[in-house]
Image (cartoon, rainbow, N blue to C red; front, side, top):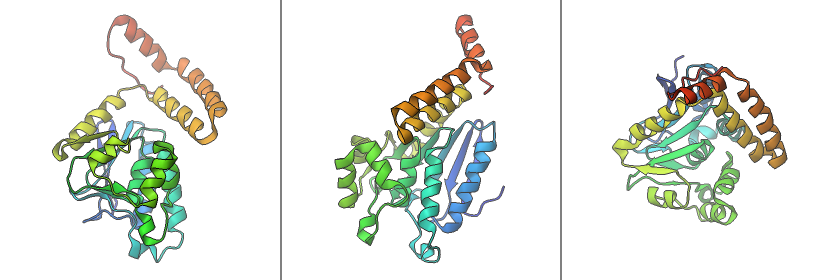
Length: 256
């Protein structure tokens, strides 16, 4: 499937989605539609077990919404919020490889991913400075920053429109790792490849159970955990996992 604002490629069991709107990879309304289609394609491809999201070039992962384009689309807030929530609830692991600036909607996209790794660039900054424009982080940023960092730290970042460098982002837990720019994608792909060898049904089960807790609380999370545990326990992957353990070999999971 052809895309105008994205690149989507498969590298073994890993799909790499690259935001491709030079020079800042700002999100246009058309890009939102293409990201939705790319998620459809990735979700339906049984060979793909992990999704990596990054940006083209070295300057920006994503500089947020294209403000000029947004003026023509009054529903862009609702569309962006729903799409980033879809990323958040995606049932295959999603890793953000933050190769440069991740600001506004770009930071909110990274927050929606399961893991975030950032290039150690002196110029790169990450944050939600929307208040400088008289608006708020409206694509889930107020919720996901609070979920990740706690109320006071999230409020500090948003109300003071802070833009953190990679070291600062790592220190407060906004990102999970920082690598030299030339090592970012190789290290992210190593992590993605390791994840892709895990049992797909079990990976999905863990993601579903954690998401149920985040969305609906402990009781609903435990219900989901029970349901998913029963599914995994009777799977062919579970038989393979136990057999491989007893035979002292690496399991070969099929997602069945």
